[in-house]
Length: 120
Image 1 (spheres, rainbow, N blue to C red):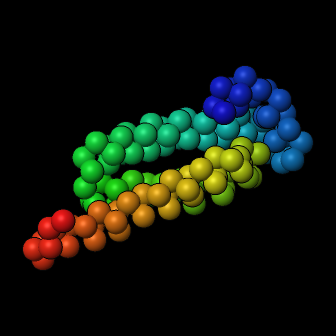
Image 2 (tube, one colour):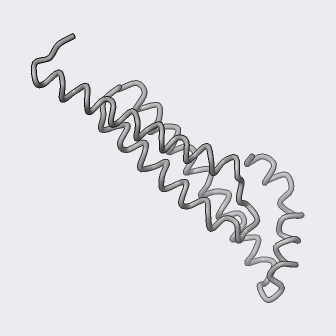
């Protein structure tokens, strides 16, 4: 999606200038690029934390992953004001949060059971 946002940036900034005529187009362009850069950085961080959680297979990394995914889900909402809200991205981030939370609870339960001496 980021490639599409870069490719059609002039159209997006023009559309934003029609939506917010009181704001200078250069300011809108800066806001648009800032949102693009922050979203790209977020995706890199989410990917790194997710891979770390998957390879470690412990509850704490999945907890971190779910918190990062939740932060991204909430951060997606203000992007609607910049016409960058993406419903698919929003739901994928939310599903990532739900999956991370599920894995965290599952691994925590398995860890508690194994600490109590119940070995399968």
